[in-house]
Length: 266
Ligand code: PBE
Image 1 (cartoon, rainbow, N blue to C red):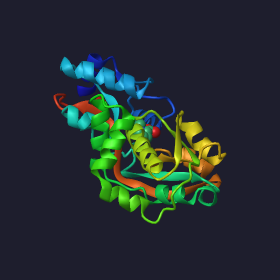
Image 2 (cartoon, rainbow, N blue to C red):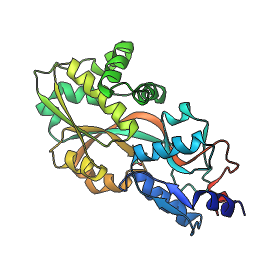
Image 3 (cartoon, rainbow, N blue to C red):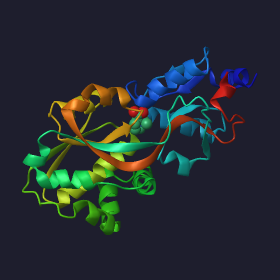
Image 4 (cartoon, rainbow, N blue to C red):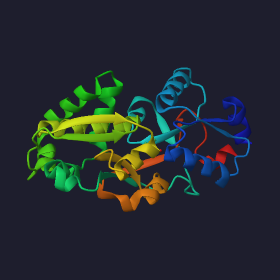
């Protein structure tokens, strides 16, 4: 069987990321849904996953990783998502902006900018590729905002300028979120706010906005990836809706591998 062959070649390992990530729960669900009893989901970090992918790819070795789009990996390597007929990874999603209760009163301009923040996968990919190529995230964010004044102008339209108020944004060190958080931080700074970025884990990211120790985040993948976190805290924060449409999670392999579906791993 194909699954045995691939399993032997990869040690029956799926290279995962941070244990709290939604994609890890989805991958464990896939292992159950497709009865991949022999397979193991390896915990680690997004950076370690990317390093393992790079190493295997350069040697044309088989590898299976937890992957998501938008992501620079798809413009850097020839990759494919394995088909997911049982929908263990949900469908195409949105990324939501979520702020603490009271932010609108305390910093109305920041609230307006966060509320109006909205861009496309191609935008965030530009920033992600730039960071992957070695540009400092803050510089990459500045570069993107300088080159996209029209879009940024829509986000800041009508926003009351800040007076040096501190805005605490929380994010997880996923490549998507490093890019988006740095961009919105830059725009808030350009409009008179002092922004503090805190890198946390996914649970504390949601908890922080709910308990008001953080002002906001732009990193809630919904409706399914972060459903559990969202459900737990949804009465305690303000969901400002989608800032990006068209994300996708799944198991990702190099195109040189001759499997096409998660079912082929059985
Ligand atoms: N991700 C990127 C996250 C959301 C953003 C897909 C790795 C997750 O799985 O929770």
